[in-house]
Image 1 (tube, rainbow, N blue to C red):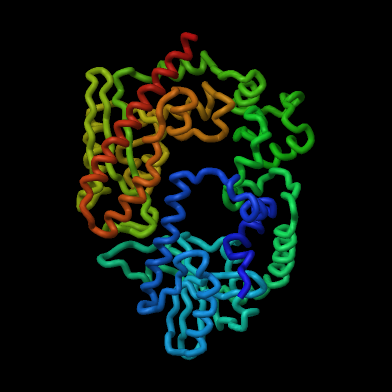
Image 2 (image 1 turned 90 degrees about the horizontal axis):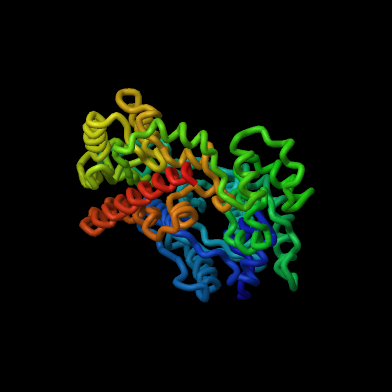
Length: 478
């Protein structure tokens, strides 16, 4: 059996951008380095897919251990189905016309074969339908069309009560009628993708909104390498349609754009890019700082959002507090409260946080969006917290009173620490730490090491916030 040239992942890649498909096949070394956050997302999807197998326990796992086994697994799948002895298959492999798919779950029910594709999402997206339509097309043309094709996704309204009930946690929808209607489009797209893979050089496709929709392409760094950091394409003050329309007409030039400026943020970003320097609104910054007392404690918070609830009365992707820290600049003291090891971390966090607020008029944080969302989710915000209770220093960059063109829409602690503060930033990304907490709670393992890592993370965020505050103050004197 000949090796495949398209899989469901590369097919979806090609549907987003044919150049990305070509580079993935012919120039994989140009791929961007995968971030911790993206690695955590991939792992989450894999974990949920494995968990979903318990909807249909006792099946045969046909997952290939290496790419060299793909075609062998296709033959093995075909033989198992022919024999008819096994009614549940995980990662069943099908190939047609050099195109391969591995189906999450295949089940024989009442004598009929039913396909199940699992997603770690709370809803069905057009991309999921395209993915399923491609898989169905391959199965059908390999001589094996399932009688139904279900997308399995997470029930956003599920609330954990005791042991997880997978039949309530997952929702299932038969999308076969919808994906059958997509066959003509699938065929046309396949032809385009196969044609691109035969090219001797990369197709000439300009950058566009497709670089980030529906997913950020992992060849974006390569395709954008000739776009200067001062380009309008990196400015989040303008909507995407305007940015790309301007870029197509005028390239990286900014002359004449002033007549389209309608907001303070647009002006700041154009100024910083045009002058290649830090933009500072000293009057606005002084007014902002007048509202802040140097003795306000500095707050740092760590949340996780587990796809599968691990605590009673919680929902999928609900914010669960790992803990928080309060740093008192005047006396150089830091109190750290870890809440995740408590039987009810949400109520314990609220109790501890309420007591902390009773002692202080306001708290300083770099970014309070998750904290505000947490109290919204738990209907506690109106009781003792308001948007004015927590001072979010990141607003200085978003209003902005300060802006640097190299921010490029990334206001994360990790990026700002290296760009503006010249600080080491490797300890400011909590993506893998959050994923490890989820796995730990799911398996009920010892968590001493994660506690220590969480405390260190909170300390690093606190240090960053203090240094960022000093940086803000320094701009009023420069």
